[in-house]
Length: 168
View 1 (cartoon, helix red, strand yellow):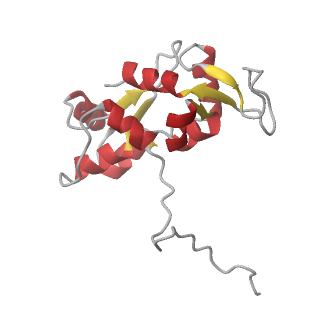
View 2 (view 1 turned 120 degrees about the vertical axis):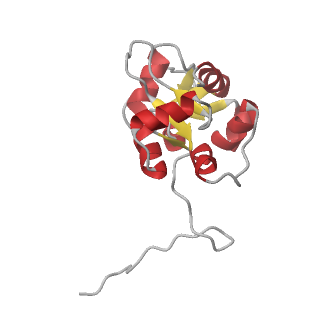
View 3 (view 1 turned 30 degrees about the horizontal axis):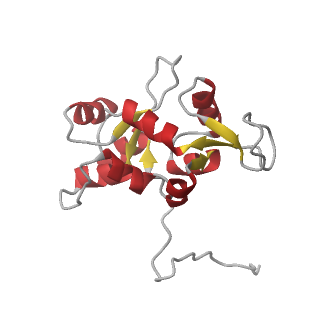
């Protein structure tokens, strides 16, 4: 049997392989990357040895929705990796570059960052933790809908505020 495309080899312009990791990891990703238990990961966060961890749960949730910056996990494992000391510098690494200029981030972009599913992001909008400014395809509506162009945009300022408030 002959295949049309035997392998998919995607590369950046400089020839390096594309990196599909999300900038924010959940607790399971941290456990796997560091070889630690959940309690050990939480203890390292509490001791501030594992930095840039955020609890992105909705207000009505009792359960933590932990997200840790991937670079912080790598720096925890390898002390040679440099880490920014200011949260505004972390925003530069985490959030899409065009959001600085536009002031908005799409739900899809937040999903790619690792904020959670679109459902979780919609819940953060519903509880007022993220500010919606309209649909990607229609600036007049602030409510999401199914289908193309149905993802709401949120303000970059509200994303930064949430991360600032929920930093461990």
